[in-house]
Length: 136
Ligand code: CDP
Ligand code: MG
Image (cartoon, rainbow, N blue to C red):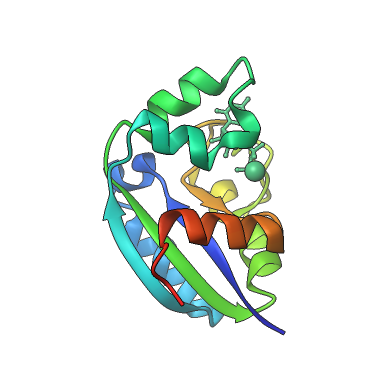
């Protein structure tokens, strides 16, 4: 089953010069880049993207982080892409994320954890429509 998922290479990864490393891992896995775009998002866009989290006590810090600089918004496609990318990204907290995962290899943070990926077909559809409304 081929599906599409939405990925953010977050501002920490951009600042650390890890965009190429992270993108190469997805490409090497066999996932196809459908489209990608540099964005710097405002608070309103952050609130829409992270709608499920806006009431969390840690959300203001997350919003500060995700709006702090350029990020790369990416749509990837491939067999079971949603599950494959979540597995590649690893657990949310870089400390706990398995070595071999992107977060496990490059992050020690529960917030600055390099990547976002859609967690379900419903999320993928919602996020792709939000970030790339013209994409067919
Ligand atoms: O990104 P993922 O789906 O693995 O985690 P989440 O629980 O949906 O949280 C979304 C994002 O919020 C995480 O990737 C972190 O960047 C951030 N976060 C945070 O800043 N502080 C927390 N205590 C938990 C998550
Ligand atoms: Mg999540």
